[in-house]
Length: 593
Image (cartoon, rainbow, N blue to C red; front, side):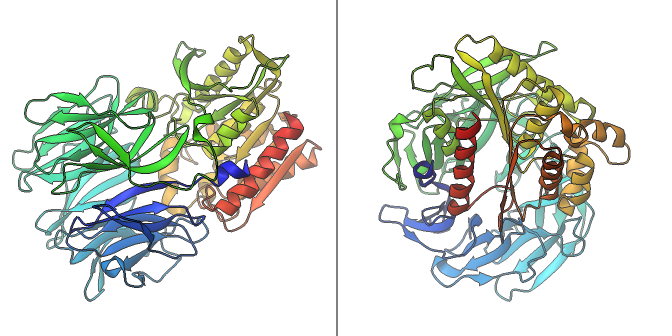
């Protein structure tokens, strides 16, 4: 496990305004830091020397000035920092660590930045604009709810705002005029639409963006600001478009399409509509996509179940792909790692639940394979074939892994996404039990050794599986999971409460349902070993959720182990923390599974 945790990765490529420098995040030092490399080729070097992980990077559109964000101990209050010309010492742009700034955008001339922050009221995000010469900051708009600055309009006179005052899947776009203060809807409202990756085209008279506006799946949409009409450039009836990059000539877009969790890279002609698959990448998941100006080559980050993330250079015309970064491999042979396949399980109501199945290469034990069911968090997320050191460790130990995308997961359309909302919460837990029933039908499985493991909302799913369906599982592993929805909604980060209530239910109107869903009220039904792990600075699911589970189980004399991780948030971004956490996990499995 320790050797696998020493594998490094590179991700989030960003190109300087003069198109000569590549910045990206690498965890070679043990935490994510900014690294630089000449775009034309050459050895990379580490730019930042922060004590905390870097979260986001963004070059100025006109220079090498670079902004990055960094929080403290995983508290998600990502402070803004400026590195002039990508070489001078970093300068703090805000000075209140109790505030959560949410990075937005550079102005087209690089003279200003805009972002949101909850300085006035910790529950709400207002809009701020900073002059990058004087460093003067103005609050230009105050309002309730959660919003983000997506871009400046091309002339710099207005901001494009994504407002999620209802929920993260129920968004609206607004044009905020910096002179008049007018905050006007940009598109006609639709029920539960999502918008991302906007880019101005046609001399600023139109917007390209990804959206599911009026559709089941996300597509590439063009919205005319002159005629206030929209058209779809690219759509699929059974898959989401997740990312795109516009070619410098603006006659093509590179599209990333999500098919059963795997990314497919396509070239799509904007004039003739032709499509061509781009090969040469590992079969996995493509993240950040960038097509630099004056370049025929795409830049992107890509990872697979057997390959940690690297930055890749793609020549779509020649069909060639080559990695720019080559992160530390710690003597590990990546060819020994295992890729998944897809199976579908029929749930209690006939719904087809997709599952990624990872089969160990080791011979089957006499009693059959032990199985670990891995449940993703979110719940608005998807289990995808990304690299997980802990998963590959399980496989190396001869444990089969089943990773379901229960109802409520993304990637399978709008209807599937909302099948677990509020009163339907426990239907997703029933999906998990259906997966357990499918495992029971497999003749090569040791039915006495089937366990369940999840993080965050996946931790809730673990607790719910153990309390709703006791006797079905050999053990549980839950990292920073939800035990009581009512206490969660009272104690999670104040800027998150309304968004989480939209998904889980309002504490006043849905109190009885939230109590019914909360595993803490049936905690005595857990009679198998449980491992709990929690970061002590977690702003999303406070440690109090794990503390109450541990206290109850220990008081009942049940087998429970609890690892508290100091100076860590909602996840473990430091390699030293991951080594400690997964050493505990390995020891727990060796003892109980």
